[in-house]
Length: 391
Image (cartoon, rainbow, N blue to C red; front, top):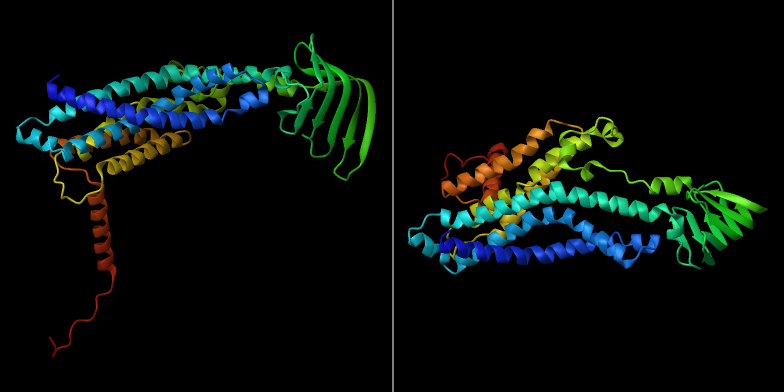
């Protein structure tokens, strides 16, 4: 690699990290905060929460990488143009590939890395997250580990204990069950215990209050009462893998006996083609950025900032691919559309680079507005001409 190519690669790489790390940190923080209930509701340790936060990171990286590359390429080339470096390169008779080559190499490396994360690391991380969350909610005792505090076990179900003893024994039980809209149940018991399978809460020496919406209350005392927990522990203790949690070999050849695949085969088809196309977006975005900001321009030229134009086009491409991937679930014809989008955009960008034709968002919009105005003008009735004797 030539000295000038190394210089461009270094500058783009530095700007790429500057753009990537803050955006990645912000998005990661918002995703982590959405799962803070794992600590507050299930009594997990800070270490478990840190592990969960780490496992979330691989699902964010492939989304952020392409946009960080757009910012890096456009900002670097715009700065070089403002410093007249691009003009000097053109005046020296250097080939345009000196500018394109290091950026394309960096984009290719990022694309390969994105493919690895999206198809190898992310599925394993998502599977680990599901198993971790399922294990956290599987045991009722873990959700009420804090004594003398109400804990929400499920929607409309709350539990409080005064003391937790060895051998799964609970003292001073208070249970509120509002899951049935026909009545409300409140349980009091001096002592109780969860069975070894975690499917029943056995309460001793207590009473249950049953209240109807009309306000009628009935009280029943009991020596022993079994509260069914099977719906909670069995459902929450199982980790169901979805299409997004599967590795690429499974998506290429799904198990015909898999329950989730049998119920939602379209999701697996859509996920497969999404993964086979998303990883090329860094390369596509690099071509767009080069076509917009890769040539020398005059400082007096009125134009939208290249970064804005490139980001707008990148968001449009991302939205189009996202929409096409979602439609594959019910409409397989969108598979061709999903593959056509990056191919057409790449060919257009390469043609712009080879033919030295700039991609300008402002110019494109202006041309569309002018064309629309001409069509409207032709449809409008023509005004009457001047009179015969006048000029």
